[in-house]
Image 1 (cartoon, one colour):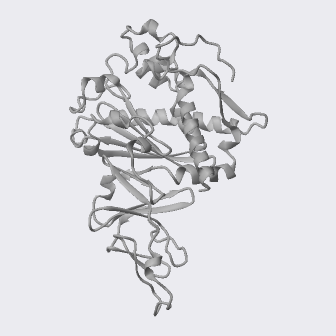
Image 2 (spheres, one colour):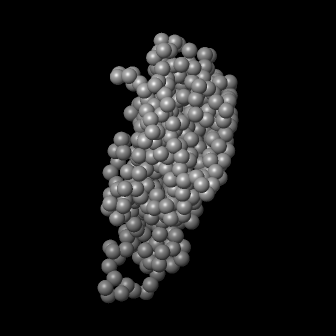
Image 3 (cartoon, one colour):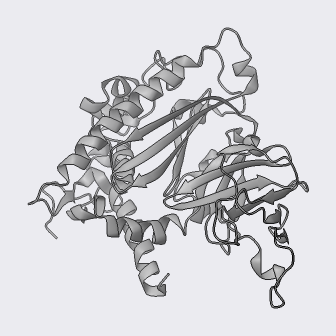
Length: 399
């Protein structure tokens, strides 16, 4: 490794940045079909993925289906009130069981639309077939639906394709979940949903999310709202000389929103609807994030929260699903306009999408084998290390 050309921080400086150059991931990892399949198996099939809000599955029989790569899954609320998850496949000859993306089952059982095999929704056990009799050596207990793991966390539903996965906050969230305790996430309700396809590899989305070297020119509006971003930083300690401004209250040095702003919105206003549960510190911070790799992050602000889910549609395409969450009283306030925050965030996401698509196109350049991480891109290195560790575990176990 080559030492980067900047002054290394002294002992106790708490400087965030990398002090040595680190290689980025190989360029073909962003478009090679075989490597994409390896990541789907090692990463997307082994980690907790965000599915939906608990409210979307609030009645008995309510269900959601989701495609994770070429794997389609089904999650439903049973008559007993628990959530159950299965691979969405009939054990007879492999037909899809439920074709809709969401709805409410007409009965407590699941019936294959092809040959009418019937399963109990409570435990996935095979109840009956359409044959006139079972073969002598046929044991229905051997043909239950394939289970997956499901977990509700603070009003959010997560899934793991590994049926033996054990939920742990630190495993599901790589950073930030503990800092969201002050936000009333369980009580928030959906105010808007937005879906967008971006022509980029899923890793490029996370790399873009984890640095702000691009912010000053890609996000001019956001950089005005969060002045620190105009300096191409995401944290006050991202420069070696950060102590020179440690006592400066200007948000372009200490972080947070510009003077007079309260939330992520077009005018910076929370329109009088700051959530009363939040502390002064929470409000002054401006924004707080919890990251649940590889599929989602939660952003919390003074008057609302936002969850962003990405799903890979292929090596070079992702689908973003964004949901804005508000206190019910806020949505019922005729003087509150949700578009103030929704339109602002959409504009930022659109800007990110254009940048990621440009990045994807460039990665096909024949001479380009891989790039380099600069000091401010320390979160990218953490992400890359996490990904490599996930792949290595898969190679070591052969799964």
